[in-house]
Image (tube, rainbow, N blue to C red; front, side, top):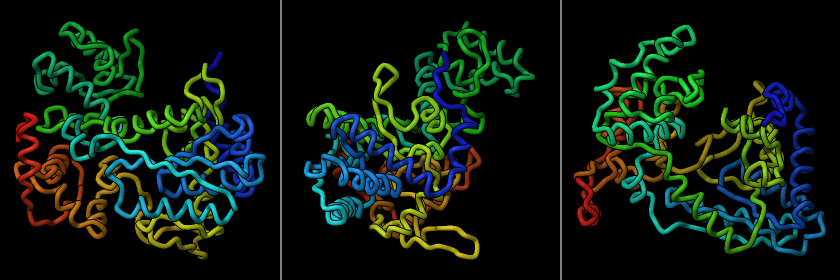
Length: 402
């Protein structure tokens, strides 16, 4: 039996539905989640445009359900890396939704015990992508365990990683096995599985391999520390509720594959963690049009939403996405990001791009390394180096070498 409910072709066909069909299905899936759980849902609000639209649609359905007099629980995870305007915006949006649909929202703001600035020192910095960061973290840990650098094993690996070179990749995998490398890392480096099959999904592209010998660590784990775990612990306190999230299959390959397995709503925990994704089959264009037509508040960092009638396109005058302001995921495709962030929050950028020796996060060194060794073109903000004595002392007390 297949692990997938839908094929990729079927999901892509969903994206061709009309605007009205996409919205109607999103509303139906939101209502289904409310009804099937008897109102035991919690809306995950990030403050981004997608989750804001999702909250609007869920509130519509909540208002016409038998639970309209109950409080709709909304959870916002303050990661300590949000734009400064976000906490205020989330409160304003919830107030707007309450007034628009005459319902009551129970907004729960959750935050972990650690700050982003400390977490990245412990687990590594979020750069390039979650997939690349995870691969780098796993491979680097194994290299450290074996007391090796990537430069020590580079000659054992093939020059080309295509199916035509399967034999060379298999030989490389066997050489790594002889030296004590585990199956996951061998897959990351060669595309060869533990059963000697071919798999490209978890491969670490050669472009990013200089990060394996970098004088800093990168990792995808800050999201777990700052968002996923606090939400999980808070959810336990408020009972067993179905999470409703603004994920869309059109956002990435990973989310497409996830949607192919679960569809919009997953209620059977035997298949994985229960979750509702009302916008799962919605496109970016539909989201922008919905926001434009309904004119509800969006986070200030987006600027204004404009409709270009001549080209029939919608665009924001400032940021196209929100999320964590210092996150480096996607930076290779958005190299001007930190220059823009500097306009909104100059002190944050000053601290981030101050060297670690002076108590900053050392983003200048990270970006320079990526530009020099990985071929990126990240624009580095011009700052006057700060000096953060208390942070220097705190890190030294923890035994951090700076």
